[in-house]
Structure formats: C-alpha cells, structure tokens
Length: 239
Image (tube, rainbow, N blue to C red; front, side, top):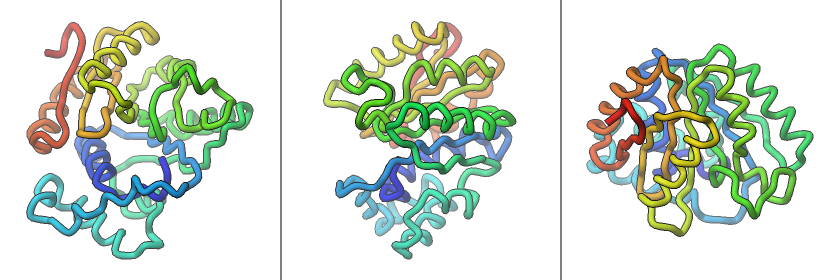
C-alpha cells in the first residue's frame, strides 16, 4: 500500500469490503498496511468516481461521503485518515513503513502480530500481493509482497486472514484458481473465499469457526456491491 493511493476507486471497494466483513465491528479487523514509499506512478489518480455520486454513492453512502471529504484536501492523502475517521468500525491499524531489509521485516511482522492478537481477522495490503520467484525476501522490492512463511505464522495463531492481490497480466479466473490452489497446499486448508474486482482479488482464508459467518457476510457483499465486487469460493463447505 502507498499513501498516494488512499481514497481512489480501488480503495473505495477495499474499504467497502472490510466494512461489510466487519459487520459494524462484530468482527475486529487488524489492518497491516505494508506501507511502502510513494513513487511517481499515477495508479492512485483513479478518483473521478467521486465526481459521479449517482453511480458510486449507492454502494456505501457513508463511506463515499467520508472519502469525498478526505480527498477534498490533498494533504489528507494518507492511510492514517482511516483510523482518524473510523472508516472500518473497531479496526486496528499498523502504519509503519515496510522496507526491503530482512531483519527489519521480521521485526515489522512481530510488532503487527502483537497489535493483531485481540482481532478476529488480519488483513494484509501489499503493493502487489503474494510472493513471486523473482523477488526473494530481503531483495530489492520484496516489500511489495507478502511471503508464504509469514502468512503461515499468522494462520497458526488461529485468526482468519484476508490478502490483497493485484492481478498480473494473466487471465483473471485462471489466476484466481491457481492462487487458491496454492493457498490449499501451503496452509493445508480446504475453504478459500475470493472477492474479485476489475483490478484485484481479495483472498479470504477463514478459520473453521468463522466459515459460516463469512459465508453469510459474503452473500451480503455480493448483493450490496452488485457486480463491483464479485464473491466466489473454493472448498468443501462453501458453494
């Protein structure tokens, strides 16, 4: 995540999803921003949706209005605003900068684990998504990825996990299937829930005790976001 992206249309969908999964604080979410330094890219410029409330406000009017107010002031383009405005009810946020240095990265996730220990769902928001072979941990730009070994540590704590994954240049549905199969193998789980937008997929890995809850909330997501966020699932129980 980069501060320069805060409040764009992808963020609107992301916060909308988190708000529905939280169900007004029923499930406490710990947000690991995995913040990296801003760059010169223009990805975060997708804010024209705020000029078209007729199309966009209906999905989450309260969230839409909060983001519209925040982005009216360019200096507010910072994820810290999420905590200040309580965008996700009851959420906890870890806002430290993540670097490529392996030792610092290890401390980073240990600190987040402490913050997240009283929460039900851990959300990881890397720039790109899960690790790729070309970016080993500790190497340049490794801060843009989450690594399987890190994910396994959090899974072992008994909390459900949600991961942001940017789509690579590949057929989206095929990529989602491949990623879900990788989750099955790495974490030895059977149930994986996905939420797909036109640019990214969010992968939810529910603990056994949370499956029924997220099954119900996912149907709400599907209804409220009406094609903007598409709910899918792979597993034995969820259909």
